[in-house]
Image (cartoon, rainbow, N blue to C red; front, side, top):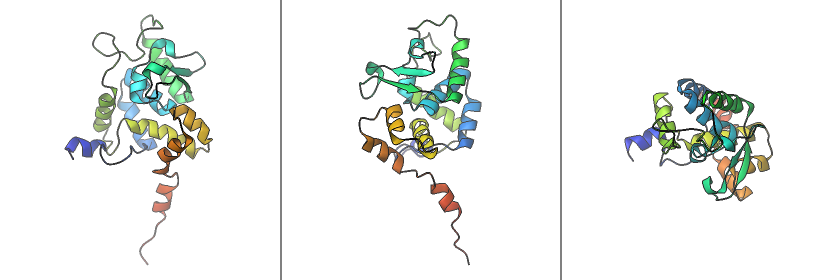
Length: 192
């Protein structure tokens, strides 16, 4: 395993959800574009690649985002909703765009207004700069799913947000990081 794999958590199993402290560090260090991108994934459950392929017209005034079939891993269109916090950051980013057109990339690259091509690399480099280890860009999506589960949301909501074809996939997705895991371990007493 390479040093980069060890630092990012690639090759060490499923991407882990981020802690609240890590989310704060990650979003505080990000530019407004990158912060909005991160929040689309955290607050909507999007894959980084899906978020990077969005156009301005994919964002509806009601705060939902259309993931078009041609831009989705499943090749099926889906509509996702953003958390209030994610929507605040996304709207702030859109307000900075000069005369945003519906077909304009929502997250343009810094070189000429094309869609960001290496979004996962961008997020993982940001994580490393913030001292977040053992996570990957997919951790943003897993954080969304875990957060829905932890607040008691119906599993069908997580399935719809993530675009999973099967509820079993969503269940497997969430089984690695039980909500009470950290608290259970913290209470463990081994000394007499």
